[in-house]
Image: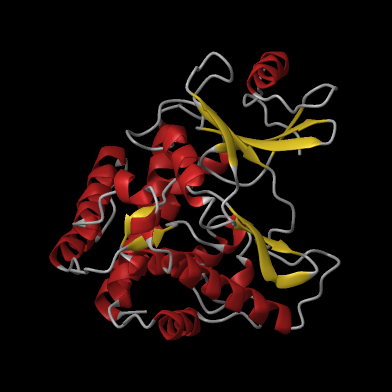
Length: 349
């Protein structure tokens, strides 16, 4: 896992810092590798002897206000870990930008497999594996939503009242701030979202980026998740918004090619044996007792939100704030996602 050019860390400076902050580090040199996936925060593996940890920092260049907040993600993990062990234990947070060039935090390293676009070579998909992963994912989401947030510190650092209204207006504003191209139907879509905001008194802890490639499984038992990552968007809010985000990533083989191939290879959920979106939603409703009849709104909003995230990345590329060639065509992905979201708003999914 080599470190990408331009995203290197100062090994000597970081090792000196870690030894001053952590008392249990073994002898030996610090080795740094970079996890290859992800289009947002930069994530590195740190190794000294048999000690391992993970460092997360924001992407290079200017970032949107309130985005990539390392202190917030650290606080979320510190709050959730005692109640939900799939959240990695955080070790430290640092806002001194002289160490790695930005604020960052360090957390424990978890082990297992991440099933992103395919099964590992040593694992055959018999259809049963896909079913087990599907069921494990929906059960885990339901279990997260079952935590009583009022018994955690999440109650003091979040504001669930008016969550969906803030979300809709906030993401519309983010789109307007990052706009580069004229996209048909985007104004109609934003007006539809404003006019159809659901009112819900139900509030739970939501991950808000819950998907297969943020999840690590035990390779010997796919019904066991060993880690759940990328908690930067976690808050207390409408659980159906969380479900909508999950389903927006939970693609099916019958989906349009732009959706399946827009970010590279199709996600693993397009393979035989995985639950459909409808099956996932119905199983979630069965486990939680929640009414999912208004899921069209939440899925529409999830695709709009994803379009805005993609557009923010493209905006940074367009402005020369990142040179990562993966982002050069993201404006096309934004337009396709907007079109798809608008279609769901009119016809359902």
